[in-house]
Image 1 (cartoon, one colour):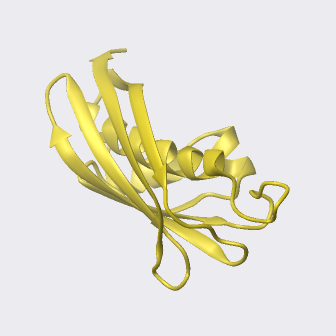
Image 2: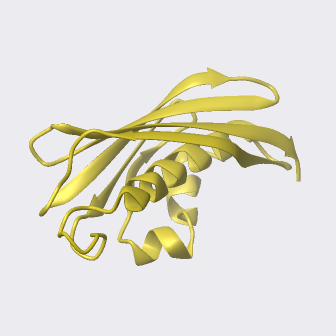
Length: 131
C-alpha cells in the first residue's frame, strides 16, 4: 500500500468522529491533526484519551503500511506521557518509526499544539501477522 492509498483508506470511524485528518502517511513517518473542540474533558482541555486515539491512529496506520499486502498490524502495547494541555485550535501528531521489523513495529508519536509546544509523547508497539 502506498501513501495515497493509505490516505484514501483513512483510519476508521473513531478517528473520523474525532476529526483526525492525515496529511502524511508512510511506514517511517505519519502526520495528522485533530481539533481541540469536541475532544475535551469537562475542564476544557484535550482529554488524554484523545491524545492516545490520535497517536494509535497514526502508529497503527504506519505499521499496517509496513506490514504490506496480506498482513496486518495489531497493537499490543501503548504508553503515553501527557506533559501539557491544549484548550483551543488543533493538535498535531508526528509519528516516527523506531523499529520496523518482520514481526514487530515500534513508533513514537509526538503531539504538539499550534505553538509547537509538546503536549504528549506516545509509544506504540504493533505485532505483525498474516491476515
